[in-house]
Every structure is written in C-alpha cells, then in structure tokens.
Image 1 (cartoon, rainbow, N blue to C red):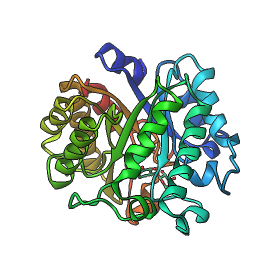
Image 2 (spheres, rainbow, N blue to C red):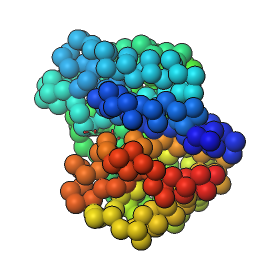
Image 3 (cartoon, helix red, strand yellow):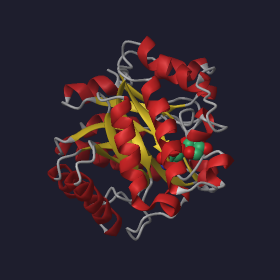
Amino acid sequence: AGLHAVARAAGKLYLGTATDNNELTNTQYTAILEAPNMFGQITAENSMKWDATEPEQGVFTFTLADQIANLATSHGQLLRGKRHNCVWHQQLPSWVTAGNFNAAQLTSIIQNHCGTLVGRYAGRVYSWDVVNEPLNDDGSFRSDVFFNTLGENYIPIALRTAKAADPNAKVYINDFNIEGTGAKATAMKNLVRTLKSQGVPIDGIGLQSHFIVGEVPTTLVQNMQEFVALGVEVAITELDIRMTLPETAALLEQQKQDYQTVISACQAVQGCVGITLWDFTDKFSFVPSTFPGQGAACPWDQNLVRKPAFDGIVAGF
Ligand code: XIL
C-alpha cells in the first residue's frame, strides 16, 4: 500500500510530499508521485513563494503555481494541498527586500500579495504556511524587512489576510528548530498564546523537521502536545533526515529508525494531523546544496529506489 493509505489507516489526515515543477518531466519520479495512495497531499516546494508569484509589484505570475495546484486536484489521491508560503524572509523579489516602504505601504503590500495568492486557490486548499520562519533560535523575532518595518504586527496582518481570502483554509505559522522543546519552541508557544488572546486566526503550527541522522529531538511528543494544548493543530511539514556523506549501511539503518521515531511521535499526538516529506527522493532533495557534504536525506534514493527509511515510515504508523 502507498504511504498515504498507511497514514489514513492509522487515523492521520495525510502523508504528503513537496514537489517542484522541473521534477514533473521525470516519468520515473511522477510514477511514484502519482502512484495510488502514495501521497495524499502536496506542497509547492518553490513555485508559490513570493519571488515566483509577484516578481514585480502588482504583477502576479501563477503559471508554475497553477501547475502544482492542478496536479493536486487532477489526481484523486492528491486530495489536499498545503500551500507554502505568504510571508518569508527568503526568496523575496528585490522590490520587497529593498525595504523602501513605510508601515502603511508594507501592510497593503502584504495584504495584496497574501490575499491574491491565497484567494486564487480558495476552496482547494487544506492549509497555508502563511508565515514562514518568524523566529531566531534564541526565540527572538527574526529581523527581516517585515519585522523591521512593522514589528511583530506583520504576523497578524498576514494571518488575517489569508483567513479572509480563504476562510476554509487553515492558517499556519511554520518554522524549524521548534520540533523539540527549547527556547525557540517556547517562544512559538508564547506567540500562539498572544495571537489567540488577540483574536487573531491561527489554526496550526508547522514543524519543518529537517533533521540529522542520530539527532532527532527526544522531546517531539511532549512538545507537540504542548502546542496542541494551546488550541492549535500541528503538522510535520518538511521532513527529511540528512547524514554526512558518504552513506553507509549503518547510517541508512539509523535513518530508518529515525524516520520511524518521527512518524510514531506524530502518531502519538492526536492533534498532529499529517506529515509532508521535503520531497521523497535524494535525486531532488534540497539538502546537498544547502548543507555541503550532507545528503541522502529522503526515503527514496538518487535512482528512485526505496531505502530502509521507507520501511521506517510504514513501521512508525
Ligand atoms: C527550499 C527549497 O527546497 C529549495 O529548492 C530552494 O532553493 C530553497 O528553499 N525551509 C523552508 C522551505 O521553509 O521553503 C525551504 O525550501 C527549505 C527550508
């Protein structure tokens, strides 16, 4: 059975994957992407980001984004899209980063961008990563063009805009290094508490989960439970588990156990609704280019062959 079918049988909403337009010409890849019940959700890996969708102010380009969205609705098994993202400090067009805007101007720029993007796919989306990576590792707010111009207000502005543009989509904040307990996870919980007390829509927290073999946090379950206790759902949004290359049989075996650990942690928490792989094959993983010397982070290898990690995922449910 496909991974999504296994996840559904275990009571989760979906198991999905990120995918990107340039990968869709590889028929070996698409055969797995579209295999019955393999993936029940897809995230656009790049084509819904700001630089791809509004490269010049007020000029929206949705060709690539539409291709991913249509993929999700044209296949019965790809039921739900999780869209990524509205506001992030990376992959911004230069007209935004230049930062020549006052608070009122940047507010309407965020509202126009996020409202147009989310509105385009309204009714077809399970959830949006509305705000991506707002925090530093010490729990302070990341200083970027949004924070530097608007302070933490940019977060409610984006969340309210996304919710208004598609009331049926769940609005998430997504970040890394918040998967286990610690200063950054605590800061995210405080942010959720503050937003809720202000009546700002916030439905979920995305735990990116770009992990390292042998170093999966031991507090995943406790931490997810603490988020859920605040009245939000959680999701594992960008799972991969990298190693220092070259891969060895021992590392691949540890990786299998690590995938199992992550899946079973989500399984143990009712409010953990689903898991998204940050692409399913080492052939297209973002890891080697971002973390030089590391890789082999996905459950299928460079040749689209299943690794022990695949069995670890199944075993985790
Ligand atoms: C990455 C993509 O995978 C790469 O293709 C791109 O070059 C850079 O962005 N956290 C996120 C994702 O929220 O958007 C990032 O995706 C990986 C880290």
